[in-house]
Every structure is written in C-alpha cells, then in structure tokens.
Amino acid sequence: MALTVCLAGCGAATEESAKEVPTYNARTFFETTSVGGASFSHDETRILLSSDASGIFNVYSQPIEGGDPEQLTHSESDASFAVSWFPHDDRFLYTADQGGNELNHLYVHQTEGEPRDLTPGENIKALFVQWSRDGQHFYVSTNERDPQFFDLYRYSAEDYQREMILENTQGWIGTTISPDDRWLALDKVNNNMDSDVYLLDLQSKDQEPRHITPHEENATHSAATFTPDSSQLYYATNAHGEYNQIWSYNLQSGQHQSVIEDEWDVMGVQFSEQGRFRISFVNQDARTAVTILDTSTGQPLKLPELPQGDFAGLSFSDSEEKMAFYLNSDTSPSNLHFFDLTSGDHRQLTDTLNPAIDSAHLVESEVIRYKSFDDLEIPSILYRPHQASASNQVPGLIMVHGGPGGQSRKGYNPIVQHLVNHGYAVLAVNNRGSSGYGKTFFHMDDRKHGEVDLQDCVWGRKYLEGLDWIDGSRIGIIGGSYGGYMVAAALAFEPEAFDVGVDIFGVTNWVRTLKSIPPWWTAMREGLYGELGDPATDEERLRRISPLFHASNIVKPLLVVQGANDPRVLQIESDEIVEAVRNNGVPVEYLVFEDEGHGFRNKSNRIEASDKYVQFLNRYLKGQTSEGSPTE
Image (cartoon, rainbow, N blue to C red; front, side):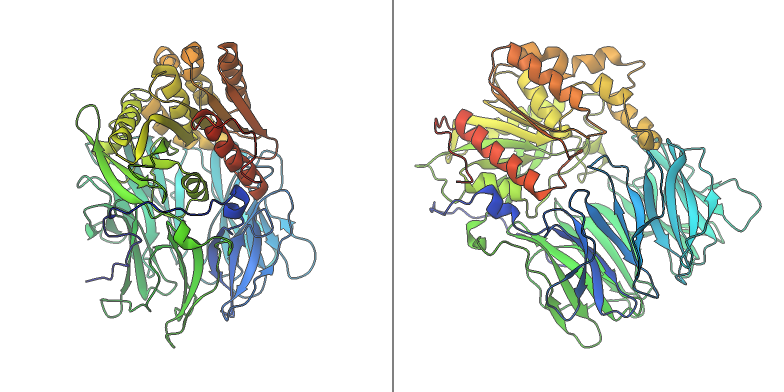
C-alpha cells in the first residue's frame, strides 16, 4: 500500500475560546515570500526556483546545503518564473510576460552574455513543454504562426536551432512526449463535459493522430505522462465513475487498464527521471494527498518526519538520489524542503513567513458543509478570527473562488489571513460547479451561472448567520475573477442579500467577455461555451446573467479592482459597472493597477489592494468613520 502524506488540519476544528491577538498590516503579511519551482542543477548541488523576495518574481538558485539563495534574474517590472536548469551545464530557462498581459516568452539565461529570447515577436505566447531524456533537445509550443493554435517545436540545447514537429491546425492541447521521443500525446476538448486523447507517431510518415479514447457517453480524458520505458501512456479520465482516475494505454497492444482509483479526484501522476518513483496526487476534500511509490519494491518511500502541510512542486534529481518539494498549510506559506534519499539528510531550505508574524496568531481553517436552497451540501472552508465569540461577534465575508470551475483549498493565503486578523470571518465557498467533488457536482451550474451558484452563496450567508460568534447583520461578499463576477451578480440580482461587495478582476458582461476570448484560448473556447453559452446563440441569456445590464439594481457599497493589462476581463468591464453604480448614488470605490493583468504579480500592488479591502470593509461593513490606513 502506498504512502499517503499527512495533510494540514486533518482533524475537525474544536471550539476555541476567544483571545486577543495583535493586528498586522498588509505589508507585514505580504513581506512573506512566495516561492515555487524546483529544478535540480546538473551537479545536483542547487535548486532553481522563483521568488518574489525582490518585490516581483525573479529566478534564484538555492544551494541544497542551505544558506541564502543567489538571485539570477533582476527584473524590476515584468515577473520572471523559473522553468529549468539545462541538464548538462549552468544555463537555465525562464519565462516572462509583459506587465501581466499573459504573452509569455521563453528565455535562456546563458553562462555569459545577455539573456536570449527564444520566442521573439509581437503578440506571441510560448509554453515550455519538456526536455528530451538525453538533454540534447527541449520542446516548446508557440502560437506565432496562428494566434489561435500552438505549434510544437524541438529546440537544440546547443545552438537553439529548432524544427517544427507539429503544425497544429486542429486545436490540440496538452502535449506530452514519450521519453524515446517517438510518441506525442494530444488532448482534444469537445465541450466542457467531453474530451479525448490522441497519439501521434513522430517516426511515421502518417501524420494523422490516432484516437485512443473512443467512447459513447460524455467523459473527459487528458494525457498525464508516459511510462519511463515509453511502453504506456497514463491518462486521466472520469469515464468510469464520478471521479477522475488514472488509466494506462499500452502503445503496442492497445489495451487500457485502470492504474489509480480513489474516492476523490486523482489530480495527476508523474515519474522520476529513470522511473524508480511514481508520484500521484489526490484532491482530498480541498487538500492534497500525495503518494510516492518505489516501483522497484512496490513499497512507499520512507520519508523523514515533516511538518504538517500539503505537498507541492515535488521533483527528483536525475540520479533519483535527491528530492525537493514544498510544504504549505493554513498557517505556513510554501517552504522548500530537500531530502537526500541515500543519506536520509533532510532540511528546510526556506523560511518564508515574515518573522514579524507569530504563526500562532494565524488561523487554521475548518472544512465544513452547509445546506443550500435545495438541500445540496456545499463544501466550504471556514476561517474564524481568534477574537470571535458569542460575546464578541464579528462580521463575515463570503469568499468566492475563480473559474468557473475552480476550488477554494486549504493553505496559506495572505489576503484571507489579513482579513481574519482584522476581525472578519471568511467562508470560502465551493459552490456547485466547483471542481474536486465529482463530475455531477461540477456540472450542476452549467448554463445556470448567476442563478444556482449565486443561491449557494446566499445560503452561505444564512449559514454564517446561524453561528453565534458571527454578527449576522454585517456580512459581505468578496471574490476574484469568476468570484468577482459572483460579487457583482450578488449585488445586482440579490441586492439585499449582502451588505457590501469586493469585486477583484471580475466579469460583468459575459457577452463581451466570451466574444473577446484571447486567441490562445481558442482550443478551450468550446468548453467555455458549453458551460456558459455561445454569445452567437445565447446572447439573451448571457445578458440576463451579466451584472452590467442590471447595475441599476445595485444599492450596496462596492469596491472594484482591475488590472489595466487584463486580457481576460477587459478594463472597460470594470469602468462601465463603476460608472453605472455611481449613477445610482451608491458608494463605489475603484482601484486600477496599470502594471497588472488578470491577477497580481507585483508585491507592492498586492499590499495596496489588501489594505484597500480592509479600509473599505472597515468603512462600510464595520461602520468605522476613521480614514486611518491599516498600514499605519
């Protein structure tokens, strides 16, 4: 039986007596460093990672022996993210866009001279795919030929010369290449309920991909990884039950076989370089359970004693003697760990929580479920401020994740901890349509957005009102991206349900948004149309669920946050709803970041926004008249 790594907060939360804790400003929370990525150097002495220690993400080299990391890129404007060391020398690959516009280019940082853009050009988006096993080539997909589709190229690691190996005219996505460089796996999205996997033999003159997942009922299929001997393709599918499973396809015999099943979605599977270890990830009630199987013995890998937390970013060195991974929990941001499988040596290489914060003052969340309008149980994550009690009731916030189809999960969130620290309870709702709870639950809001999912949020308020430590007369709603849409929808379609709203990068006009889908999303467009509707045929319904066309109903204070470079939710969406709500004579505040896209890349902007949330909520939810900033 494989090892399942322990999770943060596995036990049920217990009733706590109220206690006073010091309040911290946003800067204190965001001086916590965000880190990610774990690529071993060729000599296995360093790990390549991304960090925002400089205020914006840059690439760093972390010695496995510990100590301070070395900063390798020095951008002061565009976020740079580590991809990989070169397998045989100290060059490395990294990616960066321009001001959050999501047009990422792939760069090589050479041992001498200036970094080189391997994917130059205007309006180009590039994605690193993987290395060849021998390290002589790497694969990159770009949409330079056709903005809608990503062609696949093989680059020489020596001189960066390249050749196209797939001209993508069919909207293939999700490419992965077998270790012997012969097979290319391709995903094809048919709609939001149905997708397929195809195989292309790169050594054959026949360039027609082979369909390997024929089926009759709607089901999703997506390529995961090839086995190290290139004999089988592992793929994820929900064709055999409510949850995603991992199945294998034998490339020689064509036989399909179940590999990994669980009572939750299996999120993915990967192998170490030579195949000694197989790692699988399960979405276990908003936490990640990781299984590391030693394929040579069939036994779980024995790990050192570790702090509680969810595993992420797990990586083995090429020799398979060293392992790097991250641990993250509600009260601890992601930290990089190193484990030497030969010596048993383990060390935590980063300490990312701002030392000015006592972790005991942070809040451990509780996974709860409440009944919605039709008795459907809605899984959610509840954060209770330390100072909350029946005699010291606190205001509450419904928080809605992005998507559609995202999921609120346990783990460190500086925005949430900042709000909770300032006395706001947070209920992070996984409304119907959220991922992680089976395909039936996931599709319950298809073409019902702004309706049944909104009612789940309204009934989330009812749940909060039933808690004796919540002030039921002061409850707002906050969310980003799709969650921002839900905020605007709540204020427009249920104008008395919430007392305030905070809309962060939220859609307000589905007709415009779906018509202006970025060209690189074309392969996913049918999935979005299947879930939300086609603006060519469903415009009437899309207008009906778009808050902008019903903004005259909004009577509660609204804060809107927008990135000027957002390619998904155009700034005009926020401009127009702000103007409309102001015309109602309703308090509305508007914060635009000129150097951001869909989300935050710059730490200073995250700080400013988080401070703004607390200021706004203090004014309109707590009723505080002081204009003092939480940063003071």
